[in-house]
Length: 495
Image 1 (cartoon, rainbow, N blue to C red):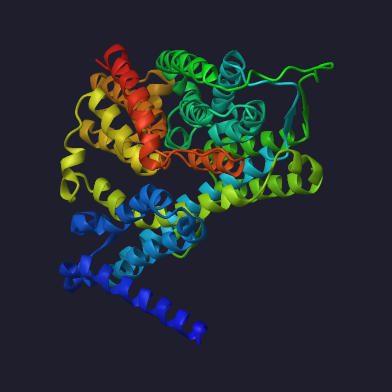
Image 2: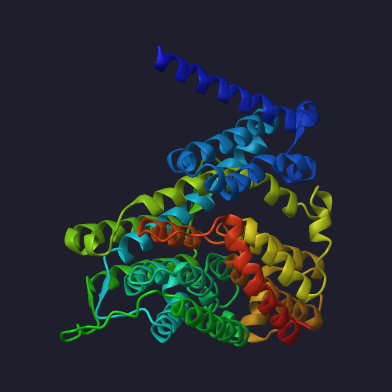
């Protein structure tokens, strides 16, 4: 009887979701069969973002209001949001909707989760051991090392390598929530600014013709941001350390020297990075799956990363992963929640892509100057996925300046100014690209959903008994600390 009632509730929930979703899109029902993919962005109503907003509010409020319910049912919430958007979206817009759904799953979500899974799995087999005691100077050193690594092994790779040693070093402390927050700011986000390997938005830029080392231009702004954040962290960490009831533990015997176990996993980590670099550097033929063009270099990358993760699992002892407190819970949480986010984000991205023709034209029309691109790209990247947000404003800048990717790539690579629009337009685009890149990477640190490693770091911290702030609690920290720094960066570099 109970099983029957549960089934009825699930079916009722499904039909309610379909009905509510259809109500959102009802004004376009009669036009659905005539809408092409190119017209979709101009036809979607603004309220079609409601399922996406619903997921964001669930992530923000449910852990605070109903933590036990959220812990056991967050996957169902993500699935409910996806159904709420996807089913009526397909019923109304048919082929155009199916194309968008297939595109975001095959081109965005699947590679996204494969890369994260690979780095998470491999990083979980590398154990940093030694007599580390979490004092302010030690914590600053660990944060700085992770920040430097992030541009070369990816924000996810660096975060997975160092989050557990940082937690172990500070296990003796009662006040340590702030340490994880600053770790997210630096290692999971701002540290990935310098190469396309660091953060997905920069990888997209590389794929679209931006030279590999062009992003090193962000180094001065990154150094200012990192120096200010580390200085603030040191003062905050000293303050909280003084509040500890017990002094730092002292080692009575000889200290264990710092060493790495499971170091062979660096080979697999290097393999992942080479595969990512390969996919952005080589142009191969394509195959079509569900109407979506998939390039062979991307298929090889995805398959290769799965192989690297599988080899790591096979060659790393269970004892090492146990020593690292390794479990699949953090990556599963990211996979479930971001599946819902990627599906429900489609209307927002399509409307942004439509520019002045879409219901979100009020956003794209705001941007003219570099500082405006920095703030609008950054704020949207905090709440939308920063990779497609980067690409949206990359294309917005190209369109406004009447440039092509080929012209921009030639200018950024060799300095050639063969564009019909002239050298001034190319120089302006470079300034805008600088602002777009910085906004997408830096402001991924503003919310938990701004960048995928943020979620994994939070989940790992909570698994280790560290009570992390709520969605808005984290934003309180980021707004108080990061926003003034971003204002300083705006006046130094973008005026």
